[in-house]
Length: 289
Image 1 (cartoon, rainbow, N blue to C red):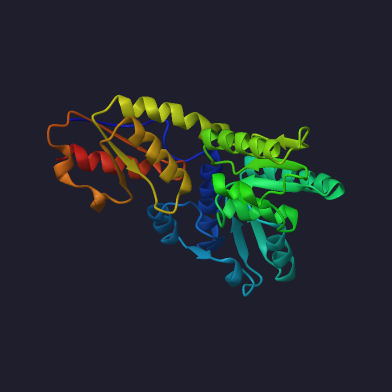
Image 2 (cartoon, helix red, strand yellow):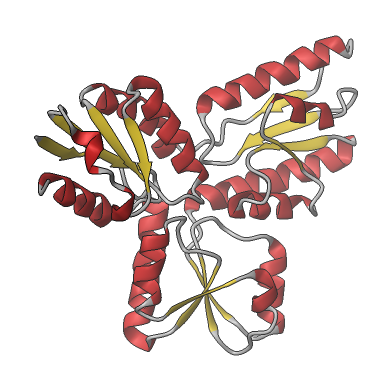
């Protein structure tokens, strides 16, 4: 049985940088607070926790003083930086530059919409760390949409500036744009002040066609991802749409030997939050069958 790991899967550069920064600090001090999971993968979080990384939430941050806190790749809203100043916290900011650029775009768009009585609309997952940081640039006034019914939240008599969470699928983003335009027409607003901004990370958007090709080249696919990863859940469905013998696993114990009967080629791939070492570990287990 031939088992191969997708070379295009694994951490995006933003996550690689955040983990590198965390490991450097842990080597020096042996302890570092991190606001939220550094990456949506429980095995990688466990690995870093053993080195001294302490995961905290926003409420716990308010209780910490005179310490170092890592801002992960997802970015944070302005409120986090305010708390850090008040509590004399040293922030080690590992926010992804793509996310920071998007935050700035939304902040400028929000200022424009305030002057026009318009709306900021973000295509993303409500409650996701990155989305929380984006909404924070708008004084929490942005409208979050994730599916067609959510578009009813928008007032189609007003201007709209439309953005996307960086890890959303490009197909879904296009569908949202078409849905908004259709609703403007139904509202009899022939010349709407509507400007969409494609803010999806190119690293993420390029993964979909590559994964489709990889899935088609194998008899069976093991898709490795943390269950919290929205990017992982989406890319798993991409693989499964091409190869019905695609299985979602988070740890080696999820593997079922019976899957591999009469299988010649197995492909192991994962999300932008899946460490390469974990995919390699899974591949070695399958090779040993």
